Image (cartoon, rainbow, N blue to C red; front, side):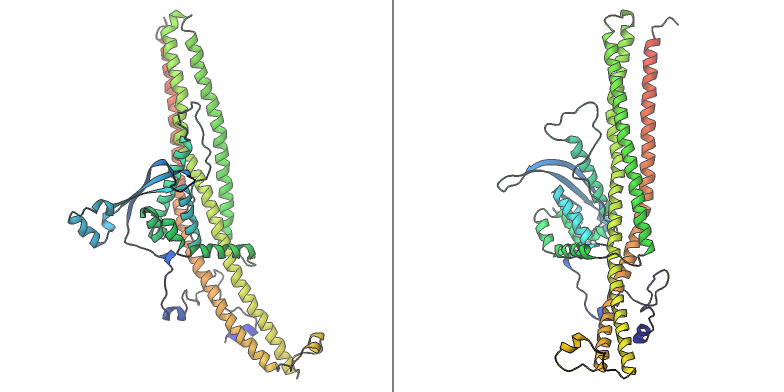
Length: 462
C-alpha cells in the first residue's frame, strides 16, 4: 500500500489542511513496547508545591579561589505549600521535627550567571516552550534628578535586577511544565554544586547539537501558517513595545527637566525672603512646597519603572523567546520535508528502473562512468529490490520526523495559548498601573499648586 502511494506520487500521509496528522500516533508501536527512560535533565517531581518565591536581598561576595573575584549574589527564599507535601513530610511536621522549617522553605544564594545557566538549560531541554526571559546584563534606568548615596554600588541597577530575576522565578513557578523540573527545584534548594551536577546530565550536548543544526538548517519550503502568524505577531509586538519604551525615555527627559525647573523656582523664591519681609512667611511655605514637589519625581520614576517599564522590557524578551520557538519549529518542518523529498526521489528512481525493465533494458545505456566501471553489471531487479529496502527505511525515518513535528506543534501551540492568556492579563494590569501613576502624579501636582496658591493668599487683604 505504501509503495503504491509512492509510485502514484500521492502524499505519504493523509495530511489534512489543518495538519492534524491524525493517522500518526505520537508514540510508535515499538516505543510502546519498550521501556522509555527519562533523561536526567527531564526528571520531574509533581509533589513539590510552591506557595511563593521571592528575592529578599542582594549581597557582595567573593570567590574563595585565587585570584579572588567579587560578584553580587541574590538571596532566593522559596515557601512551599504545606497542602502539596507528601504524607511523610506532613507526619514529620506533626511530630514536631526540627526539620520542619527546612521542609517548608528553601533559602539559597545565586549569582546572575547561575540564572543565565538555568534559562539556557530550560531553553535547551524544552525547545517547544516559551521560556521566560531574564533581566538584561545592563539595565538602563531613569536616574532621578536628586542623586542617592550608593556606597560604591549601583543601587538602582541592583534593585532593578533583583526585581527582574524574581519575576523570572515566579514565571517558572507558575508554569505547569517548568515548575515540575527537578533541576529548577535544585536551583532553589541545593546549597552547593548545583551547576556541576546539572552539567553532568548531558544537556550541554543537546545544546551543541541544536546549535549545529541551526547553523546548517534550511528554512521550510511549506511553513506552518500558525507558526508564521506567531512569528509575525512577535515582530509587530516587539516593535510596538520598543516604541513605548522609547516614548517613556523621552518622557523621563521631559519630566526631569520640568521638575528640575521647579527646584529652581523654590531656590529663587528662597532668595527673596530677606528682601520681601511682608511675604517672608508665604515665600518660606512656597519654597518648601516647590522643593517637596521637585523631589517627588524620584518616587514616581521608581514606581513607574517597576510597574510599567520593567514589564514592557520583559515582554520584549518574550518576543525573542517566541521567535526562537518558531525557528525550532521551522527546523523540524524542514527536516521532515527533506526526509519526504528523499523518499520521492527514490520513487522516481524506481519508476525509471521499472520502465527500463519493461522495455527490456538492463539498467541503462552507454555512459563513460559505466565504461570505466569494473565488475559485473548489477541486474535491474536487484537495483529495484535495493531501492524498495531504502524506501522502507526512509519511510520509518520520515514517520519518526513527522511524529516529532506533530508533538512539537501540539506542545508549542498549547504553550502559546497559555502565554497569550497570561499576556492579556499582564497588559491589562500594566496599562491600569500606568494610568493610575499618571493620575497620582497630577493629583500631587494639583494639590501642591493649591497649597502654593493658598500660601500667597493667606496674607492678602482681599
